Length: 212
Picture (spheres, rainbow, N blue to C red):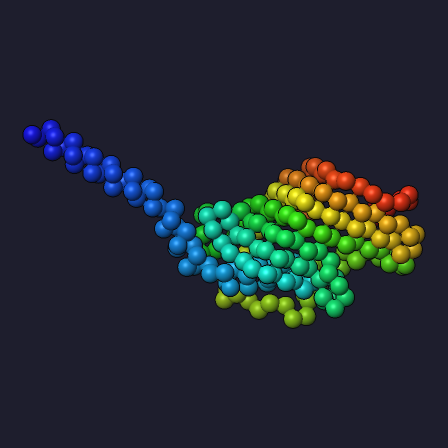
């Protein structure tokens, strides 16, 4: 009957739309990975990190998916390069992406998550922190430009988990070790105060630790 034909037609249309919706994420993922293959994402991340930090950077592997960028085995050198040592190691680093810039084939991160990281902070006999030179210059051997593409940061939230930090002061002999550090920061910006929540396990000797 006419009614049954209409119902079948509506059912087929609904089924086709449902199938399209189910396949949309897979299609978007394929398009995303074609536009940003792992080598390109790695090159973009290296360029951005080295340009921002002024240190040499190593990345074990990189990828991009619907949930954002993943970087594994990230290392940041002491100044000026890895011959001087390693400043930070991170097992994994995740960047959540804004969707609108992807339409213009741009990667714009809105949130940063770091896990399984270690950091060594030192103050030499002259009172200078090894972190003082971060961002002060472009390191030798920095990554070349990734074909005009750019990785931008437009977010204001940073989270980290499973962190370990070691602070050593050559002048005072102070040694402090922090383990199992979890951190959440929101409203992050280059200057000015912002909320920061930190939990950690602490061990170390007595002594004041100047942070300037």
